[in-house]
Each structure stands twice: as C-alpha cells, then as structure tokens.
Length: 302
Image (tube, rainbow, N blue to C red):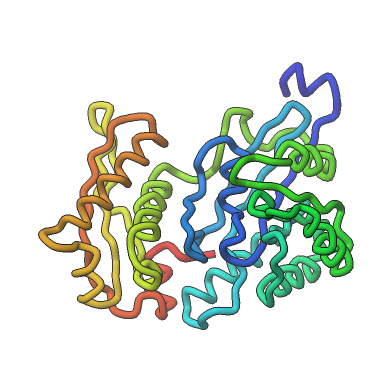
C-alpha cells in the first residue's frame, strides 16, 4: 500500500459494463482509461470478449469489465457465446454500469436491464451520447422513464466521445465500491496479453473496412508472436466461412488485405510502443461461427 493509500480508506471492486450492442460501452471504457484498450466501430457487436480495464485513482481502483452487447439477433453458437460472456461478467461483480443511448429504449435494453436485476447487482444508469442531443430538455422525461424501470444508485448523462460528465461518473463509481486494498499494481492497465490485443486490432480493421455482414463471418488467430531485436514478429490468420469472403478480404491484387494489415500494424505500434512486423493470411473454415468446437479452438471460451 502506498503512502497515499495509507492516509485514508481506499476502495476497490469489479464493475461490469452492460448494455445492448452499439451504445458506446467500449468507447466509454477507453475514455475513462485515457487509452485505447477496447476496439470500436460503428457496427454492433464489435466486442466479442470481456476485457478487464483497470483505472487507479487516489481514492480507489476500479476494475472495469467491458462486455459484448446483450442482444436478441441470431441464434448461432457465436451469438450464444456473446450473450453468455456478457451475463457471466455480472457474476461476482460489485457494481454494474447499465449503458443506454440517450432518448432510445429497445427490447434489447430491457433484456440487458432484466439480466442486471436478476443478478441483484447494484447499478448505475449511464445515459450515453448526450452530445448528439440538440435539445437537452428532452432528456428529462427520458431520465424519469429510466428511474421508473429500476432502482438505480444514480442516473448520469455522459458523452463517452467528448468526456462530458466522465469525472462525475468515476467519482460516483468509487463511492459505491467496497473498502479494499488495490488488487492490481497502480500502473497496470489490463490483465490481457499483448497477443490478445494484436488479435483485436486486426479484427477492428475488419469491422471498420468491410461491409455490414462480412466482419461477423471472420475471426482472427495469432500463429506467431515473438520479440526479436526490439521488434515484434507477428503472424496472423483471418478465418472466414466461404471462399468468396476470402476473395473480398484479399481484394484485387491483395490491396485490401495489405491496407488492413498496414493499419493494424500502426495501431499495434502505438499500443506496444515498439516496431512491429506483421504478416496476415486468410483461410476458409466452413461455418466456424455455428460450431461450438470451432469456436473453442478460436478462443471463444468462458
């Protein structure tokens, strides 16, 4: 325990970030941490794995668990995995952040809130994307509607994009956590490996660069991850389900794949703070997203 911690009681606990797809959960986590940890895109269900993000403040350490969006779309093995991952994150957590989009309420929002209520976890409602509202007064009836749906510890309008009310949110979270010594080093940001983030950064480019459906038919596996002479040597495989998907990702004369790999490499160099040599191939694995065993082999496990 540091001298700063010894001067007063500190708090520490796990906080699950829960909500439907595309409400800005990962953007919120990145904003709070002050660094890009979770990948983002405008497409729903960008997040596929729960990610631990550690925010250490003088008065407490917040252990955020970013989760896939709880959704009702699709019933294949991957969709079932994503919902299980989100619901499992509620087990053993000290607090939930229920993230919604300002002025929107859907059946998937209701499903996410029902899961939190069933877990009997204290919850703060985070109303995101308020920067998009031209009339802030319209938010008041929406907040009243939310307050009638559940007994929240607090309802806090925020903008994860520009940082509005983020400090207020953090302070509210810390006061709701149990008194406890820090569980991680003060300078630690996550418990995930660099190998994991290499996978995610490639997948982020797939989400951002290709059509609406294609990214959901892809997965990424790291075949080699080694450090040589101060440089990371990374070999990655992009798995798709059909030959025509492979052709689209590679593009004419391989230009599309080169652009994807180049941008992913630049993002890796920012995160890892060292040079990266990245090689990427594309292979076909028929119906991997509908096969439980194939999902397990690709790392989709609880």
